[in-house]
Image (cartoon, rainbow, N blue to C red; front, top):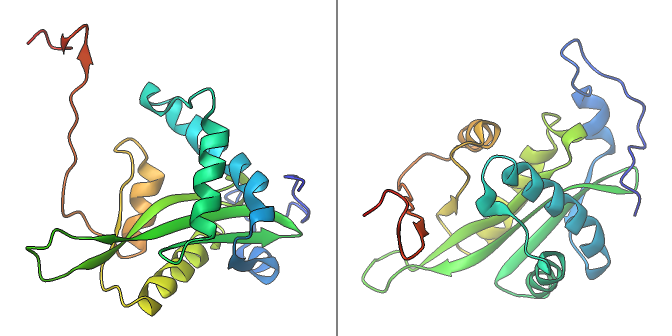
Length: 188
């Protein structure tokens, strides 16, 4: 599928596409195996965005292939869901999530985990992401899940604002420590 925009570039005074125009044309549906190549393009864009800010997100040499296989597995899974947003025949966004299990000592056994979430740069802040999020939430509700979790990079302010707008709030902080030559980078 072509990744070119098929809508006229009608933008508001801030330079963003006019929401009503985009929302009229946006179609959301569950992803199919035929969508995998277009989703990989969006995944690469997302990964490259993150790599510029943290080399941890550097794609492996076979990253596209591995991600494609992972995506195909989730498209065919009963415990995962992948949605795409389509405008003018082009996939402009996708999200995927999976059912997860809490440790057995907790009363809440299942929860939902957002795995990936990406919207093409030209279609951000148009409502496409919100619609994808609501579709994924609806799938989790149908599965009987009462809690949905998402992780995003600390440096990704747009993601931080987006997830807060969608009603997510912090509850756990993930820390990391990198090692170099058998010892921590701080010399310990």
